[in-house]
Image (tube, rainbow, N blue to C red; front, side, top):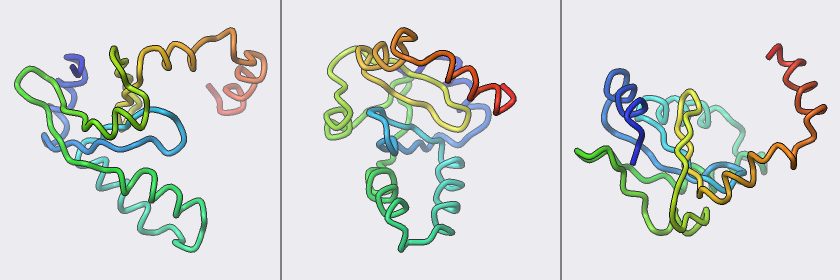
Length: 132
């Protein structure tokens, strides 16, 4: 189920078409509104196809894209292959990320966001360098 605030934002700002992809390097899914997906495609078209990292990105993200949309109850059908690829087995966490939404298996989300596993000093320094 996509949380109501995300559904409202999508309805107000975007067309109803959504694209579900694997994340480039994390074990989660990304859901893009059509307009953001088109912008990402335009950006990728400008990248050098001979670059190995671009090819990996295209194979991991672009090739995994499937179109979907929200049903009347605010749900989006995530294909079984996508759920299996990122280890979604039950409860999920839906996280807004400005131009997209991330979908994580809850157990994995809890693990990757555990502050006891993060070098907080390095993290805070990096954020400070970005002006955050």
